[in-house]
Length: 411
Image 1: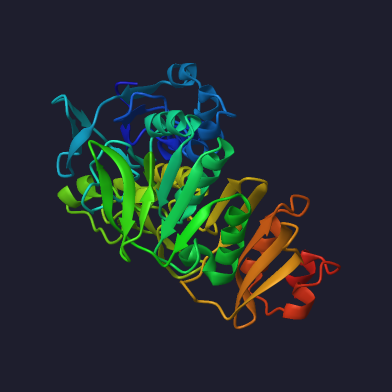
Image 2: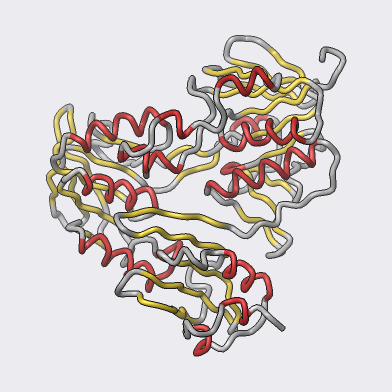
């Protein structure tokens, strides 16, 4: 393939591996170089706070492909190497080894990094962040030992790791500055639902509270909040969000604003450079605006779009945002998008107390987002169709389980 163009993918992740897979599937016969700074094969991240953390998923299950796949499909897998420079005029990337690799097309799948806690004591031993498989390995050993766990942050990572820690019998305290956990993602009503779920499983929820200090000498022994309260801890898990890894893009003077700015085909202002996954702030035609999503589905679907766009196909990344969670006996799928508090009312359908229901977020009587909890016979597809229809709905009929969801999306 030496006389063929070289496509370089920076980020040996779900997005990177899926893009490589799509390139081959679409008939690209040139050289593909997939570079990652971890030594593991490309893997999926959701299990790190779910099945893999709990020990129900084996390590091999998290990998996107078996190792043999890369050789069989002539994908050069360069692991344990960091890309340190991007030279757009010469179409080259530089590695931390000093090696330089030329490219005809470049895909940046550099992901995001956990936001760090910036209070006294934040560097103590026993403070955990969860992003990589090695982080999950360490955290699993910690929660298997039992003890007292303080989780800083009531978002998805915080609540999923709290649930895992309770499964192992740990005493768990979750501290979050919002009145309800997940308020930014789900609003106050469904945030309260997840608060109740964790309270029923024995989690101590400290809401409207902020961490001011981690306590301990050498190893963390507790946390202090703004009102002076102290909570003992054998370990602290920090889940306060993530920031996109835009350093390479900024160095190369690519447009960045809450991620690398790309169009609907995931192309930057440089026609030979694309970005995908957590790092990409992409234009979504359905919404008429740019959005950045840090969820699994965005990496999976966006990677296929980017790969096809790199091959010159006319494509657009117009999937609705989607995410899922598993906590205790609750499995949930969500799709859609709204600004925080950007909805008029919430409509539920089914048995909320029995943890088997749909929820819909309405703005001007149109469904802008929806989720189901443990309703797998209908799932999320009719919710997506309802959002895409943009048809006004009758909230009373929407709440009636006897009316099929598909009926609301019909003209």
